[in-house]
Amino acid sequence: MATVYIQPGSGTGTGTEADPYYYSELDSAETAAGNGGTILFTDGTYTFSSQQTWDAGGFSDFTYKSLNDNGAYLFSSNTSAESRILMGSASTSTIKFEGFKIANIHFRNDNGTATFNKINKVDTFSANTFNGNGLFRLNSTAANQITNSSFVVDYSSSDALFYNLNATTINNCTFLLKCSSVAALGIRSTGSAGTIKNTIFMSDTSASIRDDVISVSNCTNCCIFQMHSNDSSGGTDNVFADPQFVDASNGDLRLRPSSPCINAGTAS
Image (tube, rainbow, N blue to C red; front, top):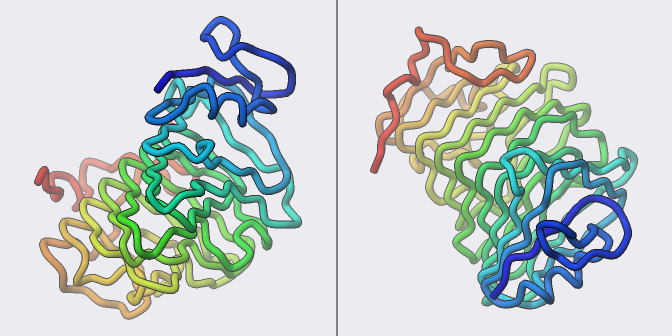
């Protein structure tokens, strides 16, 4: 178990804070970190245009983390084809992914458990970003988690936000969906999320949030606005009203003083 550092670009490093590995040396960084290890991504833009494999070298309880929240920016330059990060390789592995800002990237873990924390997704999804697999395609039998994260999703085509949410917990998150340009269903999936708490789902298009994905019965202390079924009740202590973001059009997800979401969450 070790902590190693990584920086954008290609070259040769040693993995120390003073001399980080380069992103081109990700495999070496994973090997150096080992079981229970952590790779800290220093600030900067990490650009790629095809599938990347972050399999933790087959190790378990492995963490990929931005050294500073939103300091490491993962960006795919390919807008004509799907760019994915393929996470985990063993059914017993737990992969943690924390603090990154991301754009035009699809996450997929067919094995093990994935935990996403403090993720900030802010850019437009092109027609092929998801390729039908969603922003997250998660192992449907694992206890995946998406927590303390915000997503501003501007659709330029109709596609799903999730694929396989059956065993996933969503907590303390905000999803703002800009779908009016395509009149698309902004949240779709092949299965509904297991447990959702303290989370806001809002769309700029009427009835764009699918109720078979964000099942009201699975929601506790959530705010849900513009749902496909137009449900206005259900679950536990939920709010069905505009959350009143400060400036939704520009991605400012702070709440106005008059927001019905203020003090509507739960600490339990």
